[in-house]
Length: 98
Image 1: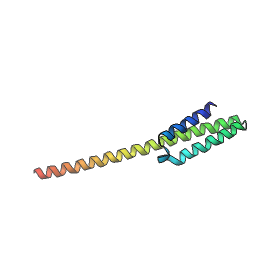
Image 2 (image 1 turned 30 degrees about the vertical axis):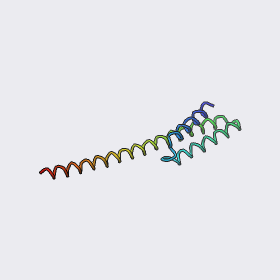
Image 3 (image 1 turned 60 degrees about the horizontal axis):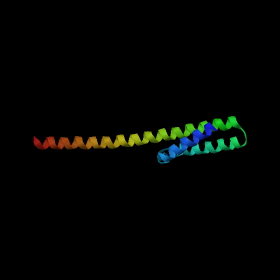
Image 4 (image 1 turned 30 degrees about the horizontal axis):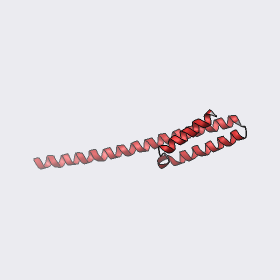
């Protein structure tokens, strides 16, 4: 039960963080694993259910981490563009003052 709850929480947190926009396959895998875990528990295959629930949580955590990486990369690219623009502007201003 704890493993199922942890997986559900990880998926819910990933959904709230809009992870699907960046790491949809991993989040889909987490959902599938959670469904399989719930089915295993209903069939009283507790060890299999626990294993699948833990995999689901890990997949959701992976999706969240990948999404954060993509977001960070996008922010970095925007900052780099801004820096490049400032550098070009400084070069133009330096050329105009000489």
